[in-house]
Image (cartoon, rainbow, N blue to C red):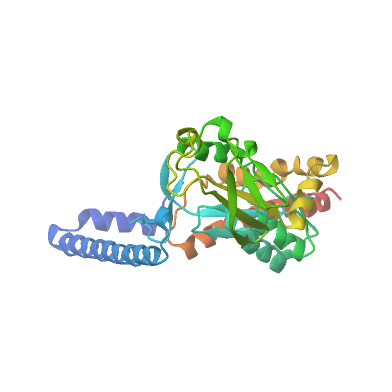
Length: 319
């Protein structure tokens, strides 16, 4: 690529500039850089104070280069300042119909906002397919309330429960499945025959949790295997799903729902892969949530133009 006469003149003028002329420029550049660093540090402190006020222990790290981003886990197991970008795609033509950039590292909280964005741009969909990260009780209830057929993979929490039980020092023979529930008395009976009495109820969106606790664990010979770390006796919970949750789980066991879910990878991952490969957009060039949103929107707009050319432009040229 050649240079214009004007560009060559500017380069020549810089080469011929004396030290006296260059010194003020360097000084101003350094002052400008120092001012920008100070402003970024000030914004970083403001962001950190905001996080502390919300008591979000996991997010109490702020980048000084981009105070509005958050330190998030990466695919390689490490951590880096990041934004969480979510792209919603039309299943038929793979057109991007919704874009969202969030400071939250967790996808679980983003379903409603993504749905609202899609509704504004393309109307409320009749069916939505999401991965396990979005398939929460809240998402299932939200979809049911809005008349949407949600297809998703409800995460299996059994592995996490086993990890918690292991950390608590509980032996396998005292896992919850070995406790018998007495419906008439509303109590649990442990493998040693001791009663865990009803302690209370908590209601969350999509489920009701009933809590039970043992009264005679202190003198039980099996305490070292059942509840070695518990100060108040062994606790156990029973969860009852909202009927809409059970209906969703039943639906996802059908061959029809499984067939629809198998298409998710192709539909959802193609735009992401195309943007990363064609635009090399694996790292943002701009700083700040608003500018990053603009960068993502431009990338998705360009991707959609490419889809439009395939759907409309090429057939017209062929005709």
